Image 1 (spheres, helix red, strand yellow):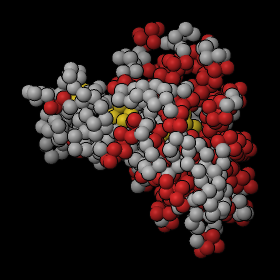
Image 2 (cartoon, helix red, strand yellow; image 1 turned 90 degrees about the horizontal axis):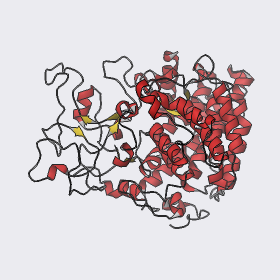
Image 3 (cartoon, one colour; image 1 turned 180 degrees about the vertical axis):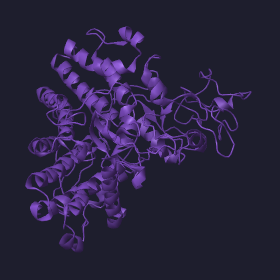
Image 4 (spheres, helix red, strand yellow; image 1 turned 60 degrees about the vertical axis):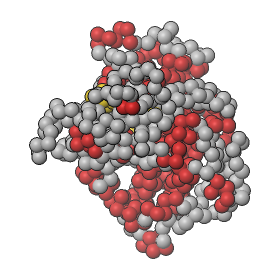
Length: 562
């Protein structure tokens, strides 16, 4: 099965390179030439290449592999991750500062790129729909049922794009045809919500149940997970609660009615690593995932933004070093109890050591990893503070574990060892036959348990019931040793709404979920964290329409407050 997945990814990635990646950001251009339209759709493989093209494009804006897309904005504007300046590195025109402080404006290049990436993806979806909706499936070796499911995947994917777009920018144009209208007017959030609901409710039942043949594609589990998210956030987006609807679709997924990878249904995993490992393509709790494959030259490239410099690359025998960019902010790392196993398994923290012997004899396993910037030639110790400890007088021989008194701690005060680091997805060393074969999970079963629990809790006036507690504890128990569980498990009294938000943060860190969670809980513009003070400005709950879009389309109107 893995070989089949890899071949599919490779063929789609190759097709993408033929089309040209430069076309990703232009919604109006013709995605396929007349030559392709007239001669391309001759068999199932060519149909699938066109249908899957929007998926390969989506990784550019939805996964933690790029610095301009949805993931960047969802995480760096929230209360868990930051990209602080570290000496001579990482200022980048103040882009990441403005995300942390919520001081962005309409001329942000990363905001412009995010819009272009997302709406470019909509262009791919619309182009494929225009072609495939007219195609005779049986004539190219595809049954009518499967053809209907493929077309429904694209309708669902279009709705998913609009869910992300309205979250970021509020009112945006709903466009279903490539190139028309020329200057579309924006639809209201209510209109977009109703559109997404109608598209999902109509097309998700037409999707195929999730199975190993659908890894990397949209199946019923993916579609119902999108609906669960849409319903859970209905009160925030349109002022009308839809918690019963959320609970109902969560139950469809949990019961196995929508399929799954564990004997026809999804299952919670009992450890913290399986879901994110380099053999996670058939993880039993997976519902929707990006099917990356290093073997197909389409690897999950998280290391650029979430890995340290070349010494960390060498220590773990990875192929590529990182930019030493994003870190876990102190207030987020402090949310984990010391005996919470996630704190050990999902982060790099403390002193770093080489994991393998160097064939050239430069180091051996267990040797300390040294820094190359502020701590050049001295051990790298990832610490839970962001401050210029290397500038103490006299300069320490080794980084202090605790933040010294008297130091500033702001976005401008980072060093190469500031903050705990990402280790949730483990690529393995280059000698591992599955090196960097990790798939990226967009939805997993744990989120459905959390969504159902939250919907039940909100229906009950924000007070937990035993059912709510049981749902969350089923997910939380794997995070603690058996001897610690009695004290760590929730009760009706301890599982408050604030604690539920905190536990969502602990569980889904690095997964691009945090901004929407903070919005739904009313904390995005009202809460403080590390170097961020609340603006209490509701206008900051959505980003400005990029100025380039306003200049190009006179029908668009800037969002309030910008």
